[in-house]
Image 1 (cartoon, rainbow, N blue to C red):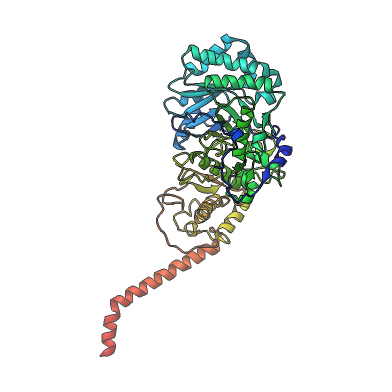
Image 2 (cartoon, helix red, strand yellow):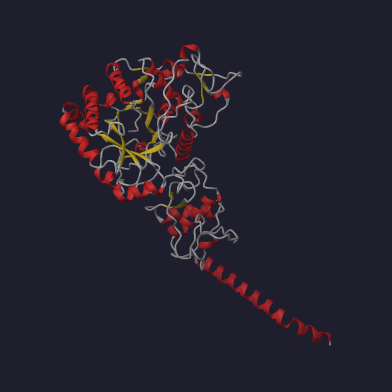
Length: 531
């Protein structure tokens, strides 16, 4: 789960990671010194290469039903998901969808499973055999950050993994379904520079046997990596652009002084720190799978960088990074697959504010912000890239919405002509309806750019077309090329506007009548005058 309690370890170690500009090479392909030249990991063995999946938490007030969730995942072209339990409703609903799912053993079940082969076998039968292969279960994450959060269960973590694996062997599913356990990034000490990273010595007696198990069973090392927390705890040392995958100038690249490898982003450095840590224990054939990563879209006053713009930037660039098969400076030949944390905002989570705001979507399945992921395949390309609209949120009073409406149609120069009396989007005549149209007009006019659907928190992005009847919203595919003049006055239901509207219509009618009269009778009048 997203939490900063396990990331304080970065605060001091980041200071040793040099930010240098080397004019000769300065890129990821710098040759490794001979000390590291033998360090090669086996090629990624994913059927279709690296992928981007999503985590699905359940602390959502209005959690969609299993069937609605399955339909939504298919609509969004999401092909890989990870859930934090083995919810039978979700697993049943995913049957036949070809969506690949990692199921989880909750931490509170570890002791029972680790203490009894029978319990482990029963768990596999109930949660795997009963659904597979109709539901494509591809992995089991045993616990979550157990080494750093549940010390009492640590001795039984590996026994639980082994018992579950043995039960899979008995069902001849061990080649199809991998068993691993997600770790917090704090199990890695001195992560910067990556070449000096190593696992916490107090945990090595548990980590090494787990790595040996992963190597033997060809399973990935699951890691939860959050550049957001690295940045927050090291502001002034780690530039925001490096944390967000933004393009950086050579002087902003992070250079490992031992390998001379250049890192343009924090994420790759964290992955390579894991590889170097494994190498220190003579494990060089285990691939890193990032089971959690993301960026919060909202925070409290102490979390100013938790914003929709930054969340959009991080997740959009992360997705592009994976689908570009970018690899890392240490292993350009291997691109780690990732699971974005998370699909929905978990609004039932407690403080800080950011804990409830990691989702790509709200619980009602409308988008929290626009992801810029076009051109990188079909992932999330159905709605969040092309068919998104900006509408007024529920729960705000008319005065607040009216102020936002005034700005959109005034200084924002949104085209509000369609919400004038008599026009196609005037009815229903209420502030919320008119504000939604104005918000979408401004949002589309600004090219759906990050931050253009906020209006001081009263607007939200949705993938549901708000068009109704003859009212077609600007973002709708059905919209025609209208050329009406922008109307900047926003009190569309006022008596003054109705009067102005009537006067305008009257003038148009008079003008039209005069034109018809002149065309019909002008020749006769001229002939009379000439005579």
